[in-house]
Length: 197
Image 1 (tube, rainbow, N blue to C red):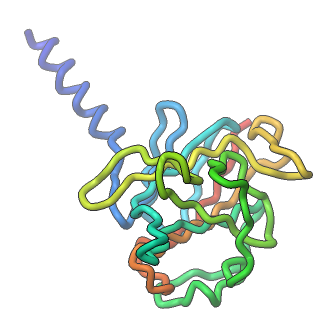
Image 2 (tube, rainbow, N blue to C red; image 1 turned 90 degrees about the vertical axis):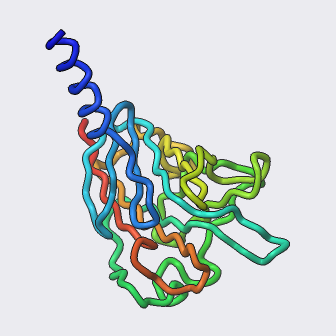
Image 3 (cartoon, rainbow, N blue to C red; image 1 turned 180 degrees about the vertical axis):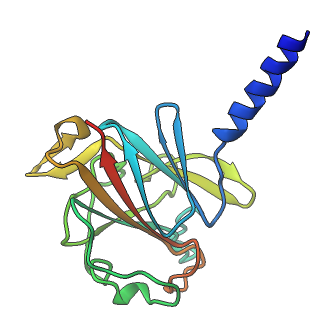
């Protein structure tokens, strides 16, 4: 009986430690059975050079209502020389200025984002037929969006992480949840991923 109680307590403790922390101030990165709750505006994690996903809270893109909810992501092979801070206008940030967003094919879920200092990609969800990220659930009044990254688009080709010729990738993610064009707490993250080969 004591063993059963111990196993039950151990199971719930492990489940609690691996729980996702969905809030408007965090990101969740998943790879296999590993879960990383990203709370800091700048954070470094270690992953295998395999597919992983980034989950975040936002609302659906609503063109008719002119509510353009979309995350913006810059993906590079080294740290971008930008300093993000609260109160900064998104339009004033290098790589995020107007006209620097890469166009994707219609309804293309972006599994292989452009690896480039030339600009960013927009990550949005309108419906299951019109999207660049997947909707994986809800949390309160927010949708949970899942951006799955299988590799990067580099040298005019999709390159899986296993073939990627660098030991790190850097992702700057901006999620303007109140659509005011100004960075606020929980709306910007710089993630450095070191690949363990």
